Length: 470
Image (cartoon, rainbow, N blue to C red; front, side, top):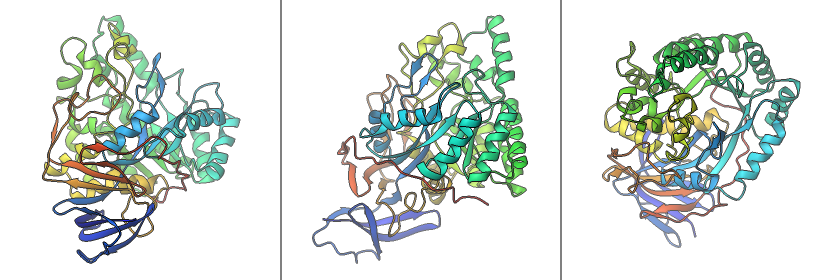
């Protein structure tokens, strides 16, 4: 028995068209004029008055990530189940090689964590925390044989993930040889560590100082440096992750204007949250919002929120991801009581990205088409999964979300909250829209406010090279 989704408005980056969608097995097999799809022998989902969109693709998550003396609280099972609740049907997690570790061993570990545990499809980007001859060989091998075609480097976290400019250049040159995408955490970690030590010496220990010691200028500077290195390496595809600052956006916009293969993502927290309203909450509450780069001040010399929304509209920012890295408040975030530098960095958001960016549509920041493009189509293209993922079209995987624009979603602990956290990063938010039905490869995961999925449904996606390049 197939599935027919009828009477809905199918949204793609190029527009919205009233169409019926026929799913057979795991793929979309045909699109029909409204009311003309065959229904005999098929399950019918009536999408009258609703949007039919490709399943969300979140290309930046951290499930089960060891960090700061603890581990991200979502497993691949709990995290991908929460993703399904939020209309996300594909995630790309970060396999982690630390200093002294082996790239192949780390990837094997992540495969072991995810296999038979995921509710939605998954892939990996490989963090390279120690760049040497062996890891450079591994980059080429993983790209050519393992379907791992993106590698994340860090200009921050000295002693943990940090790479110096020479190491970064070597990794970029290797990526240029094999066509891989370099993902970059662009903050000047060496300078940040000095500012952190100075703040602690002055007795500035509250969560808000996490943002104050990571100024936006140092994100802009690191972004500029990464772009220059990518140019020297032969215009290697460079993807700046979790962008929070106007200064960094300026650098990406200029590089793109000059024809470089430079791209960027931002995350919901950088579009909505502020230091004053979140990090500076009374007591230790601000720890819930510690992530890196940090949430910026509303009184900064640049209007970061407005600039990032503009960047999304103008394609200076191509993708919205989450950098989902959840920690519970009790016993995890509390590790940093009395010392903000010991607060585990990360927030939970994989469940709410589609909802939060849709609210940007309601508020007039983005079009419906751009919502779909930045949350589904572009990430699939950028990370070599398109047109298998990111679009509703014959031959594509039947990863489909029916979205009800006339319903509402109340986010909060005890309301809509399925991530393995003891609090919600988005407590009290109300969205003017709602995930109605979610299909992953033709299987209904969410319907009627019920979870119908199962762990092990999600399959590993072997990715090709990015097909988003200039």
